[in-house]
Structure formats: C-alpha cells, structure tokens
Amino acid sequence: MNPVIGLDVAKGESQVQAFLNKSKPYGKSFSIKHTREELDHFIGFLKEIEEVTGKIRVLHDSEGVVLIYKEQFKTHFEQVERYKMLVEELVNEPILEDKDIKDED
Image 1: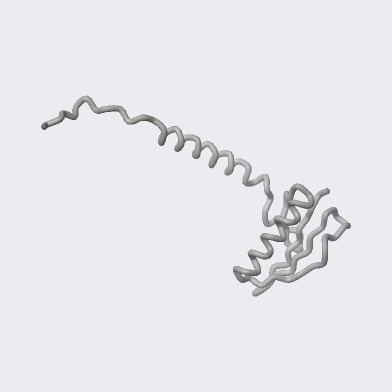
Image 2: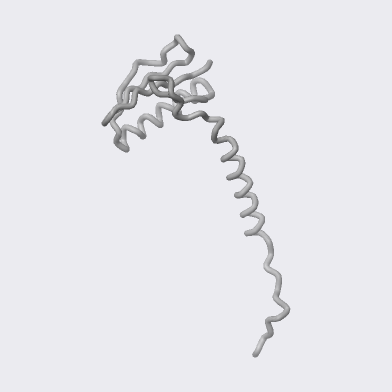
C-alpha cells in the first residue's frame, strides 16, 4: 500500500481525502475547520491511516504540492537522538573534586 492524503486547504477549513493506493479511496472525504479540536481529530485520522497501512510518507495538497515528506525529518530525528545521548552522557558523568577548594573549618 502507498497511502496518500490529499488536503484542499482553504480559509477557515480544509477538505481531506485519503487513499490507500492511487485509485482506492479510504472512507469518504471530510472537511475540518482550523480549530484545535478539529485538527486533533485530523491527527487521529492520520494515526488511523498509519495503523492500517503501516506508513505515511507524503502529505500533499489538492494541487499536488508536497506539504510534508516524512524522509525530510530523518536527519533531524537522528540529530535529536545524538543530542539526547550526549546530554545523557553529560548528566551521568561524575563531578570530580576540585583540588583547589580547601575546607576552611
């Protein structure tokens, strides 16, 4: 399966249609208003498509302009993981006693 999600973005609301393959629509098209609740619903829909197909690689608008290409974030996520490991190493590194500090008691 090569899922595709088409968005026709307009002022105030967008039209959504998903396809499991080029000619196989997934459910009916629906519209979402640009509110937090409706965008949360759209994110849930994306997760549902990902569960059914195992992947979502591209999100594009109705004219074919790519909005999100999953691979474009690959390098970013790799860098984030490296920074997490670096921070973890720094946090776990023991603090050495400073030889110049003298106890004045």
